[in-house]
Length: 296
Image 1 (cartoon, helix red, strand yellow):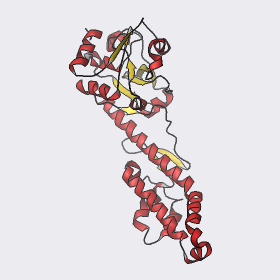
Image 2: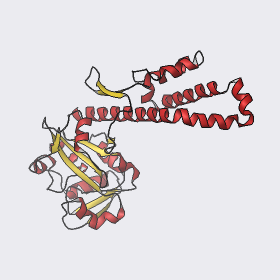
Image 3: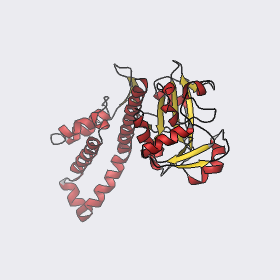
Image 4: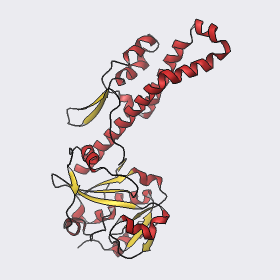
């Protein structure tokens, strides 16, 4: 026998989780729910999915988030078409909720102990989000931190992901697999960026030339502090090249403006590429970490 709505609300109170509840007629869709709570913002949709290996997932997202099933399937390493909607009969059997009541709170039931959960990182931007408390004749609102508190109380580590971002490698990049079978992003620019911190003082021009031919991803793209250092190193290298005696004589007091303009011209595209690599590396690692937690 699964948790009832009343038992769940009592558990939230025991955890000292602040929430507001809104009773309404039974609703079967997000659009129907929005008639009663949509004006408050933070409306959510919840998908109950199944993969080819008969593993189940709940994907909870803001109502306005576009969840691409094919992309999500690829991110979880399941290939195209690896995910589909779970059969209706699995709702009472596994989540122990009626049709139209999929919710992260269903994980409180022992029968759902192996169900994975992916949460929209957009929840973090909302003051409060709305979920059904195991029954679709009521909605409750709470903030993401309190949802985290509940999940941790049942032994779940919340996993927030960007459900809308498609992992597209930057220009001249490719996706490959490492020894563990995980997808990694390789780029023609990334190795040179990692080498610049070491070689800047010795040979600035050589560093700049190598940026077009490097092929291995830099560890800097997994560390925000190192990533910023790489950008500063690149800027320093370009300034070094521009501040020659001839440039100083030619531009005089306008040298600063001239350097700024040249930096924009020569570095804008490359910085965009570096930022894309950093973003893609972070997303890839995040999804593999989320996948690993789901498969444990």
